[in-house]
Length: 322
Image (cartoon, rainbow, N blue to C red; front, side, top):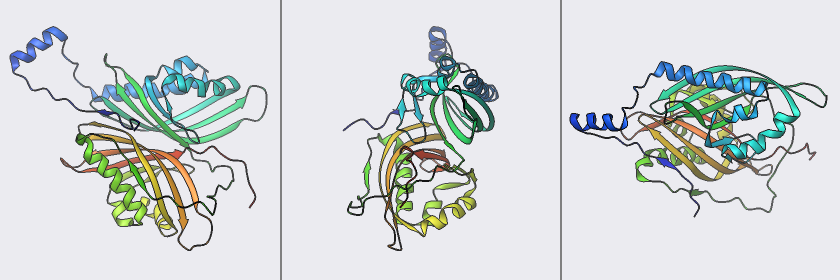
């Protein structure tokens, strides 16, 4: 079975004062964390991201990311590593002129991990001539502190606020709805995060709205594709309630990665879903998606979701008439 999860465990070292002093003399003490400075450093990276795109500086843009960064672009499969992203991004940089304006909505730091949530207005014009197109959307970047203390982005996921082109994609009537299958390969020290992901999906798939909402904090923020951000549990309930009453869900999913650091964790998932109208009218709809969930530790063994952003793996299809 392919390796589905990379886990970064936390290592806590207890030593006597003499031992710590000796280690500091030999290896050098780790600099004290300055949260305010870290937040400003991450904000500077986001601004360099915007200026690098506008300046068409592909190498400078890629330098903002770790070598093994995960790129979760909408309507595309996950890209792993900056070289894979270079292949993906090169035509975009070469064929269009770009102007991008960003608004940084939130930056948080937990030890060696940071998270930034931001929105954009992006205008791009074909260099060969043609009309300028404007897109509005939102992104979530996860940052990892480097050995020398700097920050680089290790995960990026984004989606657009604008509606997708009109098209329909249906499961063929003779295709059976697959039973839910969980694919997980993780270590016991992240069991609470695994349990949260499994329970969250199970509550959604069973149609248990109140149970589903219990997995989220009161100040939860969702970043759905083709829609504005949704703030707070009450707004989430209003957002999903009509959906819970219309479809029965069958889901296959895999946990791709879990990372933990003190009171912060995130999980990356991929999912294949089949949505069957509860009325029995209409064909089931199939979707393939990827998501990042951010979690906050509430107690030793309890975690709750604070943020969620997702997008589709499926390429956009041309308009089709029924």
